[in-house]
Length: 109
Image (cartoon, rainbow, N blue to C red):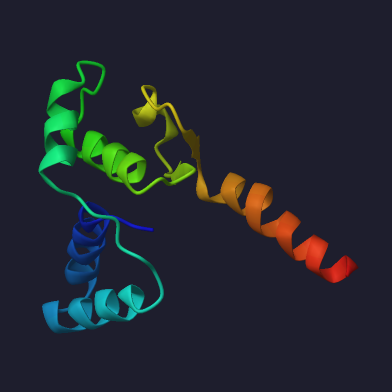
């Protein structure tokens, strides 16, 4: 899963590097391969209500993950999710823990 907030951030950086048309194509292609987590009124309200959440954007990411029953959050800013009750990993740790081990098990079969 990814969230609409993450896609907006990815679009922003893609648009800075390329034109908006190419950025839209890149985001569209990405969306063909990943699921998009819902972010709704409840997501917003929970983010605002939780006094431990100091960064609204992080709260939206967190509660989108919670509401979509995600097992973890993948971010390069792990410390931003100090309030998280689910696992928070950087991309390298996620790869090592979940993907690398998975491919090793497949090879052994």
